[in-house]
Figure: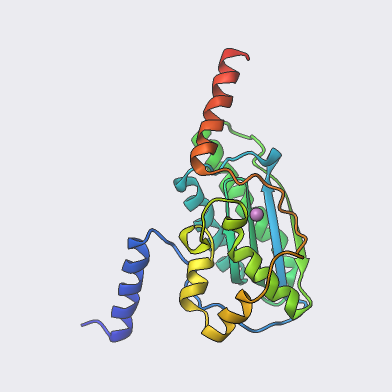
Length: 219
Ligand code: NI
């Protein structure tokens, strides 16, 4: 016999699978701890759309979750795209684990993308930028920014429609008062490294095919 909790977990997993979402399993945190919260952005080499399909985005997202869990960071929001990603997370005790965690994420995903493209050793990731969030308002505004980043890049009309970001997870699981507080912030004044093209996946596939055709014809 299954316990009620086990039934609930199974139902939730089935629900998430049915929606094609592999979401972070914790509830959104609402504690602000200065000097422990970081916002991170990373981009691919030459902003290439290496993660240009749902399968590749899923690979990146799942590897990202695994690396975050392994390092003991507490994820608070994330947005993953074909050529960059953003996240906000709370450091475990020392934030020095950030660098090895990202190195592992980049190494594992680069190896897999290069295996798929048969381009062993190709540089996939460029670099990352991290900022320690020391003011609560800045933290809340950036949570909102990351949750809504798929809209900023023109990929969806409503962020909860995008399966590789935290918007749906946040909408479903955050306490209503916390959610309303975060959503009350505007993103207009935020300056972040985010000058990445918001290509739709279809456009990214076409762009990639076009480059391949040019390289094979010598154009
Ligand atoms: Ni972005």
